[in-house]
Image (cartoon, rainbow, N blue to C red; front, side):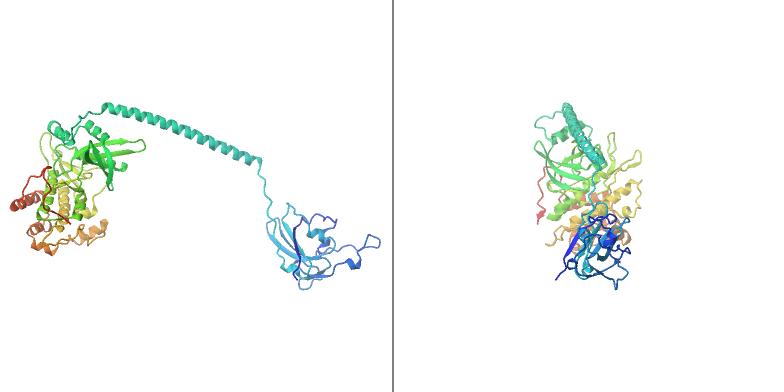
Length: 532
């Protein structure tokens, strides 16, 4: 039979109980003895009403006659848990006298002290009692705290309302300024007659202008009238979009805002006097367009649907005629860049500094044109100075010449930049040659040093392979049976030629095969292209 237990929270024992007895007289073992009753002092309890004697476990409240932590009582066994003024919790047990025990065990809680008593009425039943402290009384929030919360709420609401009002006022003012600016710009737009094409405008600028491209007002007018169709590419400088101007397809290069230096440099190079050449990407216009939230840097050029040489070689194989046309046209464009034209309105010599197959585009007639001039350097023989762009961009590590990798390039000597371009051009010719079919055999397209460095090589990787080990791209054995490629081998792999050597090499190679032709935009695609 399990003991019957009762759990209650008792008041501090420094107060007297409801029966008017001192608690120390109720708990045995406190060292205080009750006074003896005298005859006639009041009613007595009949012997048959006295409770039976109990044995209780005592700890902290043991009387002097306790044996083995056991005391005897005619009341109840108890266990008390309390928290003192230092926050320490103590659990004690003992015997409770019969007189007043009912009041002590059923006392109501007191908020001043944390103390709980549990009582039971079987032998040693309090050994298993585990009273718990009452929960802390909730603290009432002071009027000051409530006032603080109300004031903070009002302030926040007021701040939000003021912010919203100022935002809409600012937005309205910005829209009104933009509206007036657009109308003002439209007043300065150059009227371009209906039916005039980009080819007509460029021809007029070349025949009657300075030879540096379209007038700036014409460029701004064209840039505003461009309709963006879809994104066709993305690189480290920005994005390339297909656009339309009066139905004509154009390529729109949108630079990231942080690449403003590259945009400015490329625009400056394209607008150089006598820069236009068939094998250099045709420049149309450049403009800065502000949309309120951010600024867009536009560079508008001719659109070539065949894409870059890199994309073209991955999808298409070549015969000998197509190989020579690609290599010869690319050499022509590079030669025009490197050549200084003397005169009243001359052209400075220009080195590309970032030649790679992704920066060469394929035209409809199967020839190449060189693009991406954001890193180009100019040289003026009159001042004998090299004009280097102020840009954070660097060239592509895979195509860097040995003197660039080991930092031995003489930055004040323009011929050093030209020779670095020739090294990169040699790697591009290697890429073309791998895709030329001989004897029904052709290799898969690969980048230079694909079998020597990772897909995204570091400076250390390229320095180790190119400079320390002195390695160069692998040459296939089947090239030994091809006359054209046998002629190409000495050009790049045994000596580093000048551009004049390369130009005349391809010229006489064409002439020996009877395939020297004038390349113009009206020329049909050559039959030498073999789709996979």
